[in-house]
Image 1 (cartoon, rainbow, N blue to C red):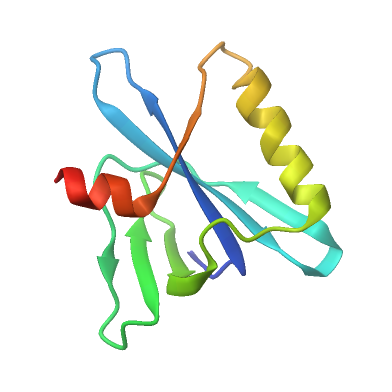
Image 2 (cartoon, rainbow, N blue to C red):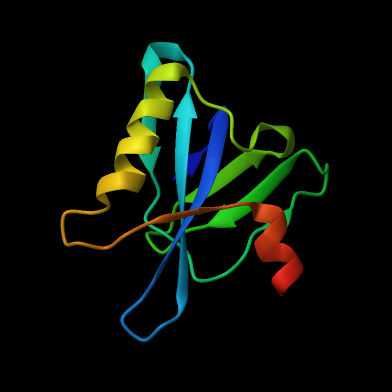
Length: 107
């Protein structure tokens, strides 16, 4: 399944074997919709038109992320994101916000 959010944020956490996993917090302006992706151990690539980052996820979904929309979200979805960062996942996994630029420079 393909997803094309209007805004997105990269989050990361360490797996049990100390590898970085990246998840996407994605949002759409209509109805303050949001979702968190299943995660990926690989980095995205730029689409041929250079308008989207293409990021396959562990679940098989593909996210097409508009290049200029990192860190864009509504007031409501921003509050959801803040809560997720403060509390983490139900299993205790803590998430950290990271910029795509920073992880691409590290590789």
